[in-house]
Image 1 (cartoon, chains in turn orange, yellow):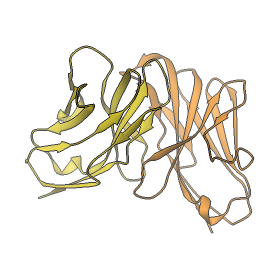
Image 2 (image 1 turned 180 degrees about the vertical axis):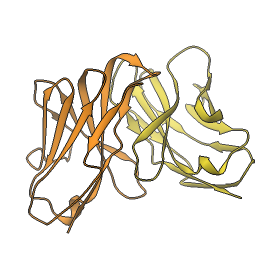
Image 3 (image 1 turned 135 degrees about the vertical axis):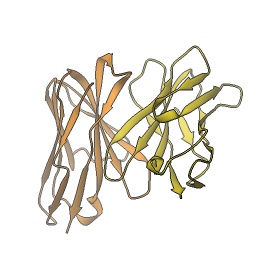
Image 4 (image 1 turned 45 degrees about the horizontal axis):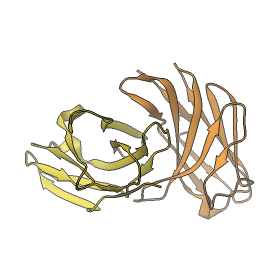
Length: 118
Length: 113
């Protein structure tokens, strides 16, 4: 079945530093990847849509200069949280869209990254 | 635009009892509907989906859901739950043909022995 690998699974960083999260589709090409943010005991909120070779599309209220998204290849998208602050602490989840339906779902999720900013 | 409402934030049930997790959606266009399960500190796993055809959809782990267009609902059911079903469940909707999902608030299912 389709696998989306997200790395790291957990990261703790100091306020003011930047953190990069990787999302890889391991056995399929993903022309589109999505980045979600999930606060404790809340739902997933779409942050941005990442398309290979073009600029990401950000949802309303998401600062594109703070959450930098790069989708340089068909198997890798990265989210960089720049100058992180404690309020950026959250669970970040990526998902990748497979053009061909694999294992009954065209959208496959990574296991998430728990970011804690101290 | 689409929206999803999960009517119960928490549902406690006893092991081997039946359960229903409610989901209502709003959309001005035709939609696809999904149920996902999330275990602690993990991503989402697809339980089942409705794209078209039969309104009763069967998924993994013994779950099923019924699409009711007139009531704009897509409730998730399981006739007999297990301890291992303890998790967060999310209902989601997408516009037909679109890739972007809109999630409900989630329902925490807790199974008591």
